[in-house]
Image 1 (tube, rainbow, N blue to C red):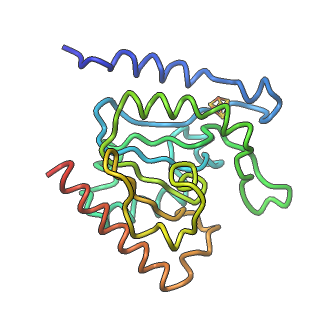
Image 2: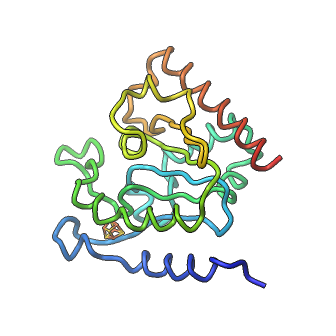
Length: 203
Ligand code: SF4
């Protein structure tokens, strides 16, 4: 018998996939809601927004940043990128590609109006899935859940209990934060924290 809540999650996912609120509001030219995950996932990753690669694939973290994220998850003890993705629901503050900046050097930061429009999808999933571990990727996602503060104060520590929140920097090559060796040590501690959470959740 299907677990209770599965039908509600599927209905929610279908509705989210069809969302075009930000197009109607003139914020983005096209909608491509991107997220992945299954009922029962003990981990929930919240990122910032999909990039051009995800716009095409409709699979979260399928570009270069995703490859780096997969390497980090191997360091955190997951048997493979596939295992990590099987046990992790992956969503973002803004689920559609926000566009490139005018100089073409990077992606636009998600506009506050789009993040506000998108928040109810995330809130509903957190309510339905009640994950054990919330992985916060990048400063925007960290601030959304923990309030203002620096990456140095957050990465390498855990916050809360149900769920346990594990902040990570963004794995994008655009981020210079990891150029600093002290920050790479923060990341190493964060992945060790995640490894402990994996052992608790998956045995
Ligand atoms: S960003 Fe979120 S709220 Fe806006 S159209 Fe995409 S899925 Fe809908």
